[in-house]
Length: 188
Image 1 (spheres, one colour):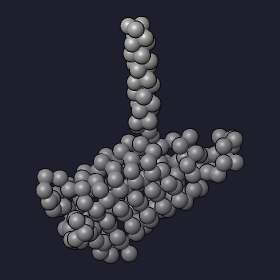
Image 2 (spheres, one colour):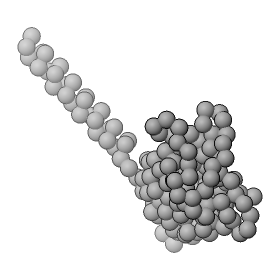
Image 3 (tube, helix red, strand yellow):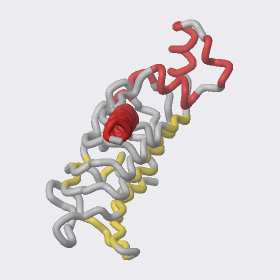
Image 4 (cartoon, one colour):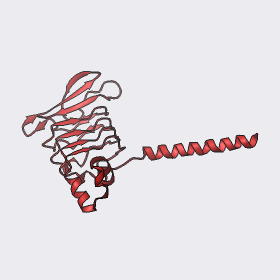
């Protein structure tokens, strides 16, 4: 009987280890790279492309959807030179950077990430929509409300109520001890 129980315990340990390894693999942070872009943004027949052709196809993409990929950094977006619409919601991004490499960007979704500061966005002269819902925004970079002489506005939605937010360092009003509300930047 003890041998049977010991056998069950060993099987349980093996199962627990397998579950742990699968969780670890599933939770492993990821970067934007050619493999992820090929899998998510190119048709199935593009899987066997030569490297030069793959780079060209990636560079010419205009719409890129990389939601739910456990991405932690925007390194690697230099491969997306012509992208106009970039969807990065439900990742683990904590810092907005490298966007200067995407001068054609018009539509950017960074909802449900780990972003505390809106920065490095004001140089995007073509940006028309910027979604940072469900982050913990504490600061918005100075100059964010100006775009080629046009006024842009950031609106914050807290529990269904929309409030205008002032621009500049420390501009976001916090409600409670943390803000996970929706924030939008709409420039026309």
